[in-house]
Image (cartoon, rainbow, N blue to C red; front, side, top):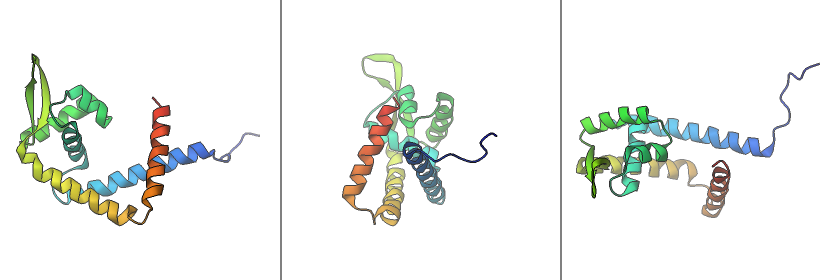
Length: 148
């Protein structure tokens, strides 16, 4: 007779499943809060990573950091450029290559993203001990490194 019920879940798989569920729920809640302020999570993520880059970055590197395909990023960039939040600039030493960077108009949006994520951290994760959060972060990084 073939098995028709789930087998006992391995701890590793349970760990991955919980990480995935947490990520999905977090993104859903962040998207809801950002949309209420006029920004989607997808666009906010692009702004966040451009700010983290601290200077011009290539489109391919940005897509890699965010973990999305090039065509998806192109649509987001066109929308952000139309809003005046992102611009393409030449890289020093290579006039053919273009880098992406934030404009001054992006600053209020970055503040809003920080405000939303700070509030979510306080509301949902603030009760967790910082030491345990640090340990969990290291564990997730180790697991992520194992997937590379």
